[in-house]
Image 1: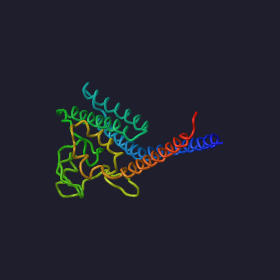
Image 2: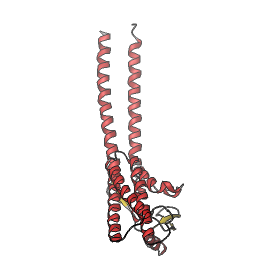
Image 3: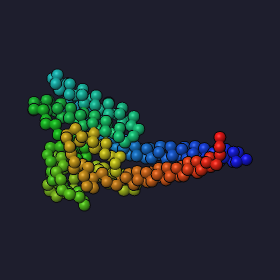
Image 4: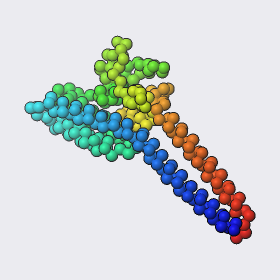
Length: 253
């Protein structure tokens, strides 16, 4: 009789474990989708912006004959657009967006090289994109800037944002939705870190991106909540295991 009882208990615990496992997988999938969707949308918007810039470049170059160097850079920009579009469509997790923004940064530099070659100017120094909105293209200078509630730091900025900051005006900041609020992308949470790393990671350590309030909040609370759920499940099944062990202590097989 006792053996039958143990088998019934084991069957029930197995069913509970299976259900808990499926629920955990659904939660994990929902969490991953919730994190990747806004980041994917951001990447797709950046790819579209590069496509518009390529169209503008086509108009500016109409009727002009390109030398081999300009042709090569122009093809590199086109390839970057196609590669970024493919990579953005294939995004399945926030970390993957880094590859998209790396490609976009390279494509914009290639376009700057085309314009320089056509104008008979030296190739531009490769600088990070504009911190306030990487879609603004390559920065032209570093400008001291103090985020609300944060410390002052030098950040790379495009010509228009350099002018705005030096005049004491608000720069043109790229914002994203977090819940019901629009916040600067660097306050969007950890899911947006790879987005910035792709744009800025190739320019050496840029600690100002990840210091202080930058990339704070956002999805951090979600991660902590899931961690707590995992610990609770671990404790629960640990207790179940101890209980099963106690049941079998009374049997000699």
